[in-house]
Image (cartoon, rainbow, N blue to C red; front, side, top):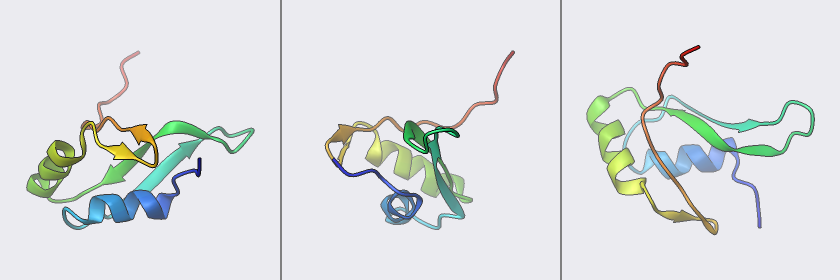
Length: 74
């Protein structure tokens, strides 16, 4: 199974509007994807549509979960 790159993630979300940035998060020691990423979509309506449309979709053999990022609580 291939790894999803930052560019793949950007292309996936770009179908729903402008994407400012997309980043797949990798382990800092091994470089292996940690299984999640962040996408910045400046227009809320486009972000909402992308979240609705992509939630639960199969991407390269994996079902993805899409949600708005939350601030960490300590």
